[in-house]
Length: 182
Image (cartoon, rainbow, N blue to C red; front, side, top):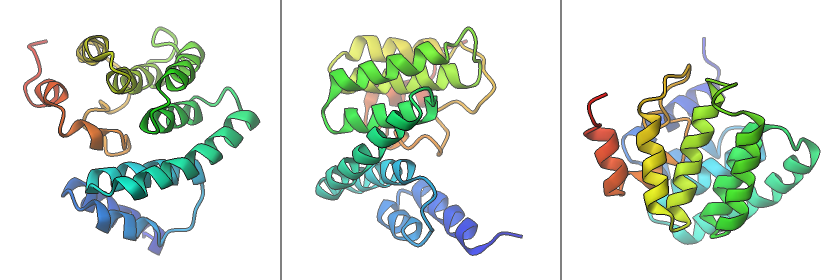
């Protein structure tokens, strides 16, 4: 049996899948906050997906404050580092974002962590593209299509909010909808 917050979360996931980002934002705002970095990062991406860039920027700034605090408290939490790196990138702080994502990759390299390592590399590919290093970022995403690992491919996983910004990128669209033969 699902409780009310769980149902709101499920409804929000459905709304995101249907491209109704503002509806998803409204639903998630009704759920108590467990992780303020995660919540604000996700809301920032959904505002961005809805075209509300002002609210996205404000929300990413809030996420940035929580992210800095969480990274100070636990500098080896790769989930926090990835979320924080994506927030930094969305705020245009690309050099900082690349430094942060590299720290996460050093803590959970693909060779040692077959679940988190490739997901971190996927986030890195997004950050590289946003930083203007498109060729390198797209090559990283294409490489990941050949990497087996134990989590859903981030391209299709709604738990990866950065997927919102990829929907309008023709290179990622080609990889997602017309992947090369493996």
